[in-house]
Image 1 (cartoon, rainbow, N blue to C red):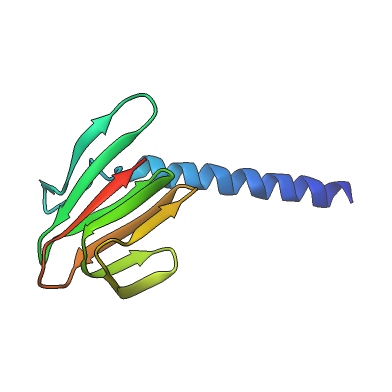
Image 2: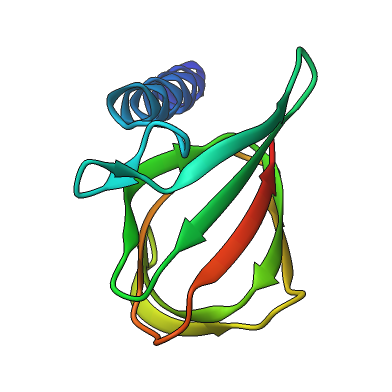
Length: 123
C-alpha cells in the first residue's frame, strides 16, 4: 500500500515538473508572434492583470505558446486552424464569443479565413 502511494506522489510531481518545463520553453502570448512579427499588444498591465489585443490578418497565426489562466473576448471573429493537446481542428470563432481557461494551456493558431480577426485576452 505504501509503495502505491509513493508511486502516485512521484507521478504527480513528475507531471507538475513536466508541465512547468513546457511553459518555460514556450513563449507567452505577447512574446509569441508569427514569422518574427508581433500579433499582440499590451493594452493594460499591472500587478494584478494584463490585457492583450491580438490581431490576425488572413494567413497570419500565433506560433506555439502558453497562456496562464485567462479570459478572452472576440472583437472580430474568423476561421482558424488550432493545434493543441487534443489535436488539430478548424473552428469558426464568431464575433462576441468568449472563452476562458483556469489553468495553463498551450496552442498554436492560424487564421485560415479571409477576414482579419481581433481578440482581447485578459490574464
